[in-house]
Length: 473
Picture 1 (spheres, helix red, strand yellow):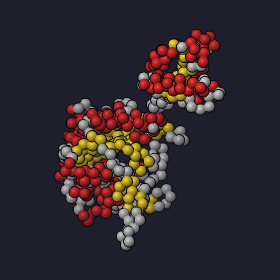
Picture 2 (cartoon, one colour):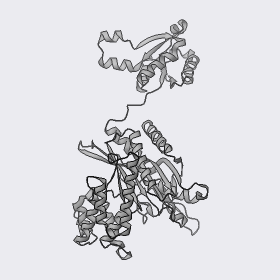
Picture 3 (spheres, rainbow, N blue to C red):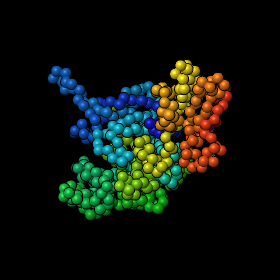
Picture 4 (cartoon, rainbow, N blue to C red):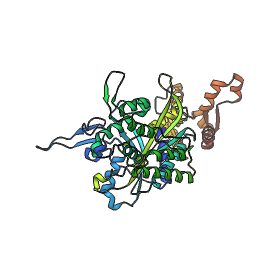
């Protein structure tokens, strides 16, 4: 929680610097508010944690669910309060979301998201800004440049590709759905598996057969060409995409938007070392209506079996112009990003980039039960000086146990004042950090030359403690 709170604070500072305002919405939403973007709308208790309220007479109870993201609640809030909000509306939100799915490394049933969205801005300049902000957030929390890339694609380009492949029109809705689902499995199945799903179908290792879209080879070539269109430079990638969507107005519009995003980012200093055009980005293509982007960590980590693998995506987003329309009946342009904080923390931990355990409080030991008021006054003095501190509140009879407690609390300093110290107006200061270092590294002579316990005048308590904290921070 300490690391998470620090990361949330850093990300919030970047969002705030970009002009976004904070918003908090309920963790519980109605199924209607979450809408068709539920993982499985036909089974509202699948994919999300949902329950049905008690019925009233013959009227069945409403379905409620824990939010599975922070975007659908934003659409509901914006629709409800749009007359009171500025246009465009820029908000960020942070909090837990819940997914009813099997957990795995860096993937949890409950996890934190940090979202930032702009509602009411039709220009792709808003999408470019989100990409730049995402790059800034990753660097702010400790992901070095070169260890991540923000990859950008556009749903309109895919729509153009589907049109060129002869999959436009309402009569091709089923085939388009199969194609979209196949493309979304590229990371898991590879190009060969996706190609099979574009054709007659695919049999998995267990023998189960998944029916394909039934595309002819020429049609499948166009779709596969889209996913493999990335070239060495953004300009070359754009040129290849233009070839693929030639003859499709929506496809050309999508390529133009990608080119503009690239130009805007380059003007702000966000070149291909941070943000790049990549048609293989297929996240949420059934959800987004324009540019889509995701942040991927490019360094390797070891899985639980010691195998090297890329950590993968830690953030993503895009343009979703149809989401608010469900509530207002009017199309409202919107774009945003969601950062998976727990995945970021897991990645940093796997690379050893998280700082050690948080420093514990200064512990004031109790040498005389009858002088508890003196110790409470001492700890109050430390706190008033802005120093985290506590009095030992266990059984003080065994002084060794007090030191063991301070060690477990990762206390940097222990303060000791017995009756003799009280009479002489001094306190004993025990530097726990130095003591740990000496125990591991120092010889007996070095130990004597660098004592980790010494006495100081009682009046110098704050200065002595602060000197140690400053040295060890």
